[in-house]
Length: 149
Image (cartoon, rainbow, N blue to C red; front, top):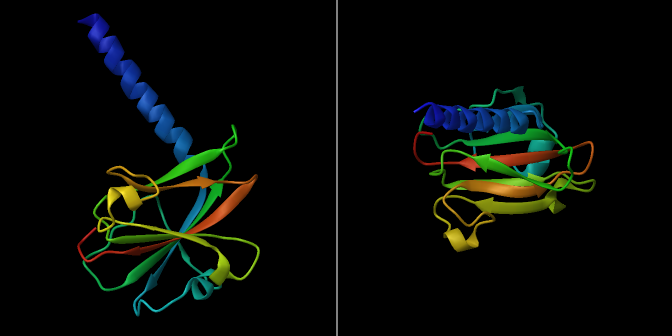
């Protein structure tokens, strides 16, 4: 029984530690509501956004929500995964900020209507594998859903 309890503590401790380490890579989050659903990435990149916490909650709405994420490069270098929850969001579009015109930035799309094989992370979770060049990178997420999230 003591052994089982010790293993349980070890598992919970490692999960909490890994979550804390991952959250430390996000330097800032900011949000912008696009009521008209007509803003382009060029419009959003030039606007002031409202600072946000790690959780965003919205009611069923026709609005589009934009999230600006500044992410620090991992100490080990390489790639990291931006996980997005819940998994029933209809459309997530990731724009990776570049040095040129925002309309030419790298863009990827995922969401629950897209088959798993067509997603950047072909499993039940929604997310994007990204490479963050040191010291940090900026990503813009365009969230669209038809149900409360």
